Length: 234
Image (tube, rainbow, N blue to C red):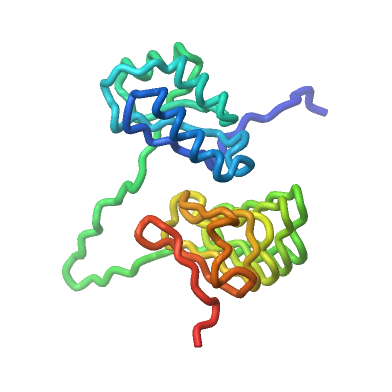
């Protein structure tokens, strides 16, 4: 029997990214407080990375920034896309420096003479949950769709990098497109959700209680907001 009591492996985790457009920490505190107040339990303990690309080379108090993030109940993981000086200061404040890029597009493939190009897409099979996702449970379907053959209870959370399909009542939280898939959808047979989110855009219960509340719906992202429509259109 081996005496080794651990194994160190690389892995991928979903992190929230705070895109910072100003170095005014006091103004950031005011706006973060308003944002978090809309769905406090959704953000509680969430790991967060600060993207510095818009304020690169600007002076920033990283000790103050880290303290603010933690007071707001986030887990301050680190920063990305800053200058070398900013990264050095962030490390001194106890923050990690991460490599992060968004909307990176691969170079187009050149078509050679008399050769057709076949677009290859890898589809992982959907993750299927048979039954109800109960309060306190969290289900994450990595790089695939999530299908729930039951309800999602109050206090439960279902997350997918693809689409979320719920063949029962959605009472808890549903998050689709968790890693930036803007075309993701949420489908449910009965909408009574605490929160729905696609690609970081979210609505809480108060915003959902309109004409589609209690009905079968599909939710998608449109023009940087969410759009709810009937699941079956007559």
